[in-house]
Length: 424
Ligand SMILES: [Zn+2]
Image 1 (tube, helix red, strand yellow):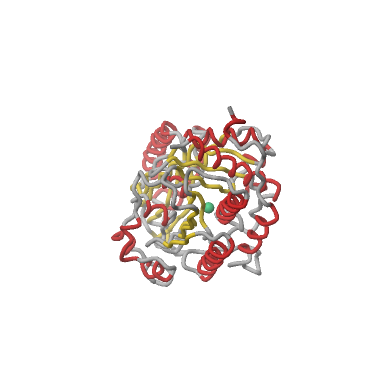
Image 2: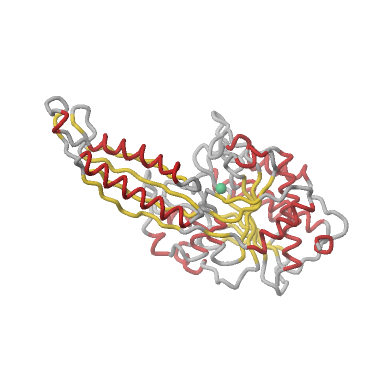
């Protein structure tokens, strides 16, 4: 029974401290023109956020701080216990001109939960480890969820050494070293499957589901699979003035038809998101009929059957447009990352914590990628979402009401206490 799972008196997080820490972190990398956050991987904002986190973790929380070779920031509490740690946290980096809540709030809530456990002298069966991951967001090194990918072995030293900043040319390995990591030892950052008891991440929803329902929190059941293709439409470049309609093989017009038909796939597959996000037109001159268009497709779903259905539809569309417009269309798979279910123990613990906090038990999938998807390869992983007002994210308008943050922090604490009791 639930009552036996949790301490008799309700342990409350400290709202004032939580919001104070969040306000402080929100000043780091603040873009004073837009009100957004600039804490991209390797930026001054990233570095300063790390300095701030280390200071609070050391001086206020008295954690043992450790920076692993890929520069993930770790803080451990009661390390001496024999059981394997429960790990929790998120990331402090942001996209360019991003929001204050994405990632950061997951770190701040994790901090508050440790502080609450400490000052209430709660005896835990498991050591607790907080983590703030390196480079979760898409960045100019063209790699996201960098820190957790290295931990679970999806990226190794050789991969890292091939990457450089597409704007400045700086090697990613150098950036990692400047952030306090050790690029030569990146392979030793990889974690064994048996090293953790569980992983828990809080994140804002970044969508409208909870906002539309006017609810505060939800448990994530599965993190979306992401499938990407690069499609090349090959027509014929020719004179814009002298080429009659019947002689044209306009690659851009064919690509435009392709974009609209791809969008229409979502009418057939309602549990799938598909987007053409990038388009390159060649030769790209006002007086030349486009001869070649390169475009990207990003497809996301948690249902493999939906993905298969969409791929069949996509092939039909491609065949039809090729025939009707006399162009050649080449497809190349660029990414095929499978959906990642969250652990049922963690989801159930979260559901109990919802009840304890008088919240309806809402479960949903995440259509954004997260570090938790990588951590799920290593341990029992789970995610807690809180409402994003109007669904805005990755922009200065990103906002979650303090009321929902407090509910989330309380649910997070109770989830952790339940998992500490239940898990080996
Ligand atoms: Zn994030």
